[in-house]
Structure formats: C-alpha cells, structure tokens
Image 1 (cartoon, rainbow over the protein chains, first blue to last red):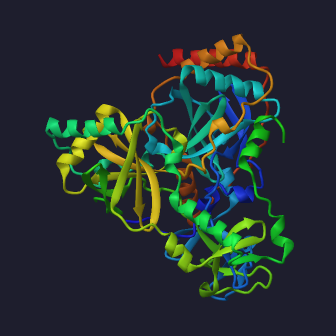
Image 2 (image 1 turned 60 degrees about the horizontal axis):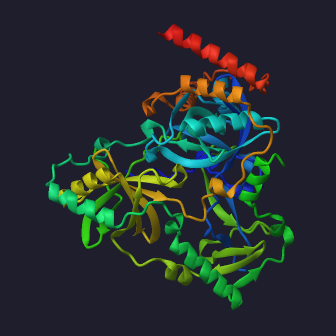
Image 3 (image 1 turned 90 degrees about the horizontal axis):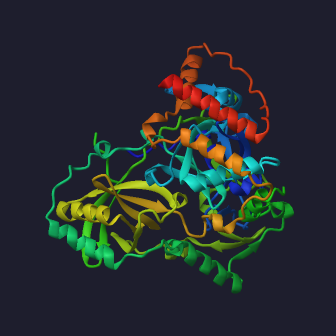
Length: 279
Length: 262
C-alpha cells in the first residue's frame, strides 16, 4: 500500500531546508564518547535540489503557500494552527512543540557514541541523509581527537538521539579529518525480502553466473566517478533557462524589493567558516 | 501480505535483459500528525496566495519559474516542462561497475528491492555474479517521467536498486578544510584509542529502537483519555573538565562496567 499522504507537521520539520536556515546550523548539541563531550553543530552535507522551481502568479510574483480553514475559508497564520494526532475519525489529540521536546529523556538529547563498528560494515540500506559536524568554539581539540582516532581504527560511532521531535539513529564517520553524521533508518523501518514476498532463491547453472561475471569484468572501473550521476534532466532544465535568459524570453523581474533580501546560502562557505572556527 | 510492485523494468547489461519489479524497501513509521485549525480543531487545507494582496491564486493561473537571481525568474511553461521529460523507457541501464566499497554513504538516497519478474535463472545468476565480484553497478533509468541515477547491489539473495543523489548536490569532504586549532597529544590519542576499542563491536541494527516514537504514542494515548502526565522542563547543559582527565575517567568507568558484566 502506498504511504498515506497527509499533512505531517513532524515530517515537514525534519526536512533540512537550507534556504530557510539562513546559514544557521540544522542542530547544535553535544557529541560524547565515554565522558568526553564535544559541542558541535550539524550542517546538511547536500545542497537542495538544483532544479527547484518557484510558484509564481500571473504577473510573475512569487506566491506563498498558506493554510486555510475549510469551513470559513479564512487564512491561518503559523500561530493559528496546531499539530494533532487522529485517535478516532476526526478526533484529534493536540501535541505541542514543548511537549515533544520534553518527551525526550535527557540522555537522548546528546549524540552519545555508545558503540563503534567497522566503518564499512553498515549496509547502504540504512543510510538516509548526511550532515557535517563542526566543532563549537573551544572544542576543536576533542573534535580532532575523535576524528583522528576513528580514522586510524577504521571505525564509525553509533548513537541514537532525539532532534526536533524525532529520534534518529546515526553513524558518525571521520571523513578526511572531518566528522560526518549519517542519519539511518531503524531496523523496523526496513522491509525484509519476506515482508515484500520475494520468491525463494533458485539454484542456477554455473555457466549463467560466469556469463554475468565476465560482463561485470569488462565494465568494471576501479573508482566511483560521481559525475556519472549528473542528473541529465536537471542539466537540460538549466540549459533551457540559460537559453531563455539570453533571448530575454519569459524573464520576469519582481518590482517588490521584499523578495530580494532573501539571501542565497552558500553551504560550502558556511561549512568552511564553521570548521575554521569563524562564525 | 506481499507488497505491491511500484514499477517494472529490465536491467540492461549489454544485450542481456533481466526483468525486475521494484518494491520500496522502506516502511514509514513516523508518527503522523495533521495540521489543525487551532479554533475549530479541524484539518486545514492549503492554497497559494499572493503575499502582497493576500488573494488566493487559482491553480490554473499559477506559473512555474526558475530564480536566476534574487527577484528575477525565467518562466517555464507547461510545454517547456513536458519537453524536458525524458522519453519513457523500461531500461535500467548499467553503465559501469565499481568495487562495493567505493561509493560513500553520502550518496545513497532511497533503497528499492528489485525482485525477479519472470526470468529467475538470469536474475539469481546476476545476484551470484555481483556477490562474487563484490561489485556494484551504476545504473540510469527513467521512472514516471523522471530520470534517475542509482546503484545496483546484491544483498543477501536479492538485488537492490538505490537511487543516488545528484553529483552537484552532495558536498564532499574534499571541498572542505579540516578544523584548525590545537592538535591532541600522543597521550590523549593513545587513551582515546583504548576507549574506542572498549566500545568496539559489530553493527547490530536490531539493538537500536526508536524509543522516543513509543513515548510519543504513549503520551498521545494518555492524553486522549484525559490523563496527560506533567512533563519536566528541559534544563540547559553543563560543561566538562580537561581532556586527558576525562579520558582516563572514561576508560576507568567502562572497565568497571565490563568487569561487572563479566
């Protein structure tokens, strides 16, 4: 069954929206191993979709998404809506941000690395989203200590912690001296082949396997080249945009200056500043 | 109950095609909330408005634009967008293979089981071959008018197809510089190594449970019955002492715990 589409307040909150973050970290908190604590900030390790389009009105003015009450048709501001869990048909239990925050036991508010595992032993099925960790002022030494220790041992640290109304399972990797957190799916969020109902494995003749092994060998590369992933569709969209821009076709400028103070965030620049201890 | 396939395709390797059905490998367990109108306690709807006039803009009048610089947009018409759609295809084209350890965690997006669709001989032969070669295929395909790049892997007895992130979206460590500041001493490094070794183990995903999800659900149930427990306020954090001291104490504490467990 496809997942039910509903207005999910908590889901919205978990999406890192770098444009709205204005260069602020996604989360700030403490990373601990043993009794050592390393205050850190988390920044997304990926930029948002390059091809994202804005919704515009008939005159090219950028539009805003707004909640409204169906019965009265009245528009609602952020402080006029609440988060509700449907316990019975159209019967809701209201849950506030404060309650969600207070429901997290204190020990779960830190990323406490309770276990270290071989860094290459986690199946890729688990990985969800990456974040770079930057040290808070004064915690560079402890940060480097952890990064260097993990680098030398080839280990990744595992922890669970609660952030913004959701518990995360994370693996912390040392990536060339920089700590990177990968949020992971919990085991019960992954289906097994039995859940899906895949047919049982069949024995196959050796010759059939050898045939594929040969095909793999002829197409094998030693390294992974990320450019092989370049999204052609996005590239052609950007090309079309460029073409239209040069021809001054369908280009609109919004008179209202309100829009222009929305700064475009350069994530790499922010990360570099944060890693360099400049803020 | 068996899952329903979301798409059917054929893995294309040279001239050989292996038909597969895709199934999501993820089941969402997020606690789902609805956005409600605070006064009526009814579900809200969404629409697009002109922020200046506050007027609703009906769907048929909405245009899509790419922001070339703040406040300047290039409008893409419905026709433009349709032209950008890739031609439909059932092929999952494997462009090359790389050793299984070469793609960093950062790239993986969503996993799908690619189950056999008919030809089981070739399917399980490909599984065997990928496992033997410890290889992963880089795949390109078009699904529902959208272009995808991904990785094909054998895990257990089956094939998994992962969507991978767009090359230009991922920030890699090479783009960044290591933090500056004082380096840890040899003594600290030796102690940290000891500490990490005590905590070393195998990755066992079943050990980790989303306990917070359970707490939230429990709280909701109590609140529904009118017995919401009072929750304590969140206190700000304290800070720790000198690094080598803390390391020594950590090792001591963990050793004691180990002894007790033994």
